[in-house]
Length: 178
Image (tube, rainbow, N blue to C red; front, side, top):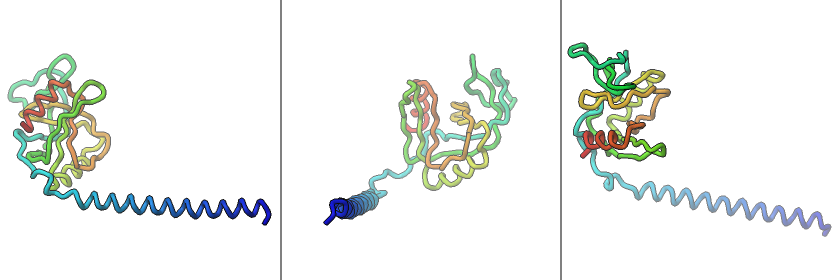
C-alpha cells in the first residue's frame, strides 16, 4: 500500500472515530440536560409571595428638575442635586413575585431583581414592547426609585432595578420582600 494511501486511510478512521465520539458526547449531554430539567420540579420552588409594597412601572411623561409641588400630580424621585418631580403615564403594578434578590454589581453599586410570576410575565413583556425607546420609572411607596431608558423590549421574566447605592438597594429590598 502506498504511504499516502495509508495516511488517508488512517485519517478517515480517525475522522469516523472523532465523529462517533462527538455524537456520544452530544447524546450524553442532551440526556443529562433533559434529566436535569425533568428532575427540577416546581415543588422545590416556593410559591409566589405577595410583595410588601407593589412595584409600579410607568413611562415618564415629563420631569421637572425641582421638588414636587403638593397637588401637582407628580411623584418625587432622584435627580442631580436633590429630588426631581416625575410625571408618569398610567403603568403596570407588580404585586406578587416568585422571589426578590439583592445583587451586588461590579461597579460597587447594587441592584434588586424581582422575579415575576408566570401570570405577570406576559403582561410585563407586552408593556415593555409598547414602551421601548422611552424613559420609564420604577415607583415604590409613592417614590420613583429609578428612571432608566428602556432601550428594547424585555422578556418579562424579571424586573431588574440597578445602579442603586448598596444602602438604597437594601432599603428597596426590605420595602418589597422582608
